[in-house]
Image 1 (tube, rainbow, N blue to C red):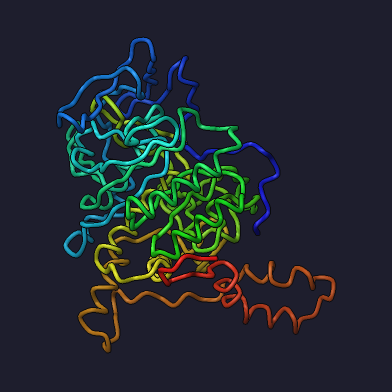
Image 2 (image 1 turned 45 degrees about the vertical axis):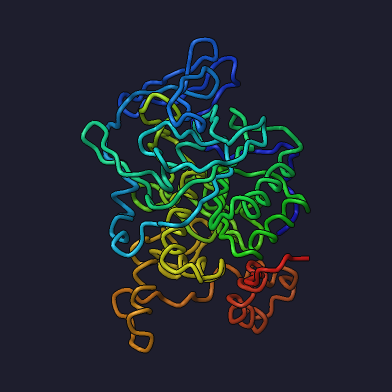
Length: 426
């Protein structure tokens, strides 16, 4: 489970249409027309927030300038209806660290939402987003309600705030062997300096002991970590594990389409926990006040929706440990017919039920929850394959039966050795 990917390439799950290096410009589809808007370092510019003056300035340095409005209401918002949870929680008081390509504070949906962060690529507060990916992710998580072309846009947790931590440049794939160490540094900084409550990791890389240790460190201090499952899928067949999503204690998110079906590019595997919308995604652009659109989408965006729900839950009950938040999300998800499977995990996240179940528990700890009671996490029917792999030659029906009974325990013992205390892990 902990072996590295077979290739040394560090694949970054930016999940958008391929983005060219800085010199030739970045290509995104227009949310309104479907055409590509191209940004050039020579002629383009971006609105950037000036912390010193409190005003917006223009700089030709940081990403695609898109003014296109929305062409339709974002379907994930209609599917998930996070607004139904807002009477109980908007995510207020929660800090979500977006470890990504940076987050621009220039878009109206992110006005006042972006706290000073850290740029581990160059320097600065992390508000330079050459790709646009991190800004879109931040908008999905915590964007304030706005209207574009008559269509409403908002984040899942509009009361939350975003802390940008830039680890990526402007490409969808990175071959920098230092990336795992940079991500590890970002995680520790977001934990110790930014005091993040939730971290969104819409990226993948190879396994490294340093990165794994940083993951344990953050979880041990009560941070909820959400990561993209990866976009190297081959349908329902399990693929190589993606990191950091495969690490114990990280909520691994797959992507689904408008029919709640698994998206073929979404990597399947025993580490997948939950799913969320991940195709035909629209969100705020770094500059121009418009909206980016990604037709193929990816698990990057699915992870952002789950991070938003985690922020709602964390705001409603800050005392919950990372394990309890993860269990809450999985227990209240819209389960598939087989309850759990390696393509969508426990199913599509359900914001209203995740927060509503907590509300019902507060109102009556002894009463039986009816409409909002989360189901018990059942035995995962496919987990026995991994448990009895070494015994397959025996072919014993008794052994297979025992494996079924122990599957759920193995799932939780192997997959989630949580550290709910706030002391540093070994």
